[in-house]
Amino acid sequence: MRRDPRLAPLSEEHHHGLVFALRIERELPGASEAEVERLYSQLLRFWSRGLLPHFHTESECLLARLIRHRPVEDPQIQRLHREHLSMYGLVARMRDAPSPAGRREALREFGVTLHDHIRWEERDLFELAQAELSEGELDALGGEIAARHPKLARAPWEDVGE
Image 1 (cartoon, rainbow, N blue to C red):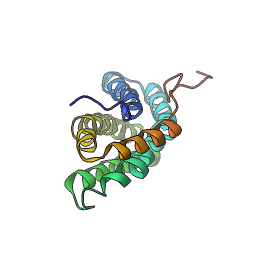
Image 2 (tube, one colour):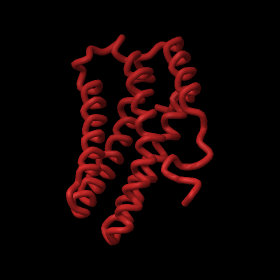
Image 3 (tube, rainbow, N blue to C red):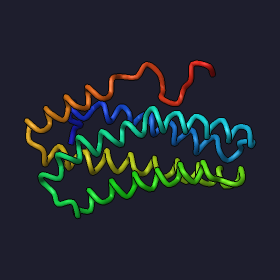
């Protein structure tokens, strides 16, 4: 099924997530401790500027409409919550890591989890939303998404000072 343009801003943000997950996969194996710290610092910026607002929009706008059509116990609804919470936990694990090796492993896990989560959302969750939501619900959803997520001029992990 073709992506509904009202969901496109979330899909565009998913692109940033996939790029970051790929960076983790490529850069992390041979990274020095200093490079791991730099990647971790960029992840924290991406987390606060990109992923947290994105997760909130998915929950407050998309999921809030989907549960009109599906019970809260639905496996798709549960999976979204479970995977978001898993990423919250991985970020906390990175923050609390007593060693660079622990942070490296949590960062690796985060990249894999983010990649798989985005692929699932694009392939399954968004398809479900397009099939289940009415045109009016999709219009309202699209308006909320557009208001919350203006197009970014730069990747959310970039910093002007870098």
